[in-house]
Length: 391
Image (cartoon, rainbow, N blue to C red; front, side):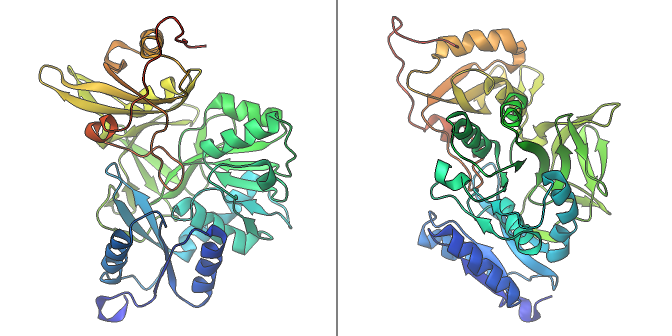
């Protein structure tokens, strides 16, 4: 442990120049420091509080990285990692990406994300370097040079749309995590010759399973077990510990972050969201992730967030926040589509159409509670005569 209970090895970093921040993180690691990369959009007061809390903590001697993960409240927790816990996955990532000497990796996720810091460590050890995009959204200029991409489905969507617009690209492989990968989006990417591998994991567990197009299958060296439908994992990629609480629980060598899952006879793993996010409505248990996945398949819906809202008789009702364009599907059209695709208990009883749902630093839709979701600016409905439906 760090002598005296403090964290003098900590190197807090943040800034709008993401490439410079990542280079400084590598320099800190070389000097034996523990980089803690924050979000420049946080207030100075919040950042100072986060840094002070970590500095007051005891860091295990093996600590090499301090990364963030956001809970449903959006309050960041700090995940402490050894270097070895990431390095042990480098071979599997190389194989997934079909990496070659001289490859350069594009890291489009904000540096506050553990996904990007893993990508940075991987790039430093195994590739010819890394690049970051010029803005939050990928542009054609970002695609000329890097050969690999490690990002989220949101970034793969940008990449595919640019390719469909005939943008020039040197990217040949994409590793996609942070949220479920839509099979249709993966197929569009593969139609352009891209090698696409999705994955499931957690900031506390790193990679659990890869999907090469035939479903999520646990990585070699990662053991999975279901206990009352909750996913438990035994893995050398586990974090040392977390600061500020969080869902990670241990039972000997086994760990869980509360993901509910099923495993079929062919060894394919299906995730059904976190147990603590389940909505109990009129005696039924609804997985927000299952409903979100169906809503996000609808034309005109860019993203969805499903939460429970209190209701005296049912306990909770399903509330859906949907990100649509101003001329996108109306609430009535969304209700019709929900009736066709969802079981009665899963159907949202309240709808909130918005231009944009908040994202975490990794580009994943941020988990909000019902009050926070209802507080987002709502899109006004167009008159019925000109309103569009699900196309």
